[in-house]
Image (tube, rainbow, N blue to C red; front, side, top):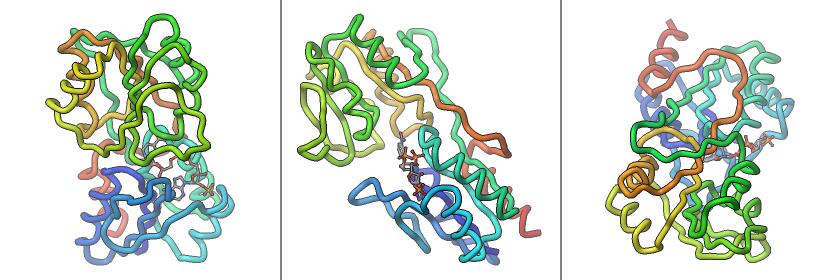
Length: 246
Ligand code: NAP
């Protein structure tokens, strides 16, 4: 059985490593190619877009893929809808691996918004020094907020032509320790964090640090995902796969 794992997350890399140990299954991991030095999942790998849902359907046929696991980031919604359409067209089972959302707990000062545009609007009302952790692709949406100062944490630096808001670019890759996040909030006198509700442990420490220090978090809620079977952890994805090959 050949399984295509759509990756770009730590969960996808972990899943690829687990699948490599299951007899009878050959996995291919796919990355979009956004980061210059991606954390490469073990085993077979391909990099780059497929050319929309039709391109992905062609790939599934050509490569004789039997099963599709969508382990992309919860905010990468285009590829998830493409995966749903392509798997339906080709007639193969598809599973989504989606880690649970972060839930607001006592002490959190969250402003929950539905998209990046709403996050920019929320900032202009109340923030001055912002820790922006929404990824390089979203920086330009904040570029018009000239009166605010931003610490922009990204994996790869923006290119010189990119429009970005005023402030400092910090290149770093998770997981991030709580002590690191506390120091950032203190050293840069941050009053507001902007975060996607990505879920998982790797980037949760900033949310804890914000809670401890009374820092506001503008939390961007997840976009809709296509209907279909889903699990919330790697273990359950492995169990689904094993069940499929019985
Ligand atoms: P997106 O908007 O859903 O996808 C845009 C296009 O990128 C897709 O139509 C597809 O191109 C290509 N693509 C996306 N994921 C791919 C994959 N795993 N393999 C091959 N092609 C892929 O996705 P995005 O938000 O740009 O994210 C790109 C990648 O970065 C994803 O793999 C995602 O898991 C990861 N990531 C995203 C975020 C985020 O916040 N968005 C955060 C961390 C990691 P074609 O139409 O040409 O096939």
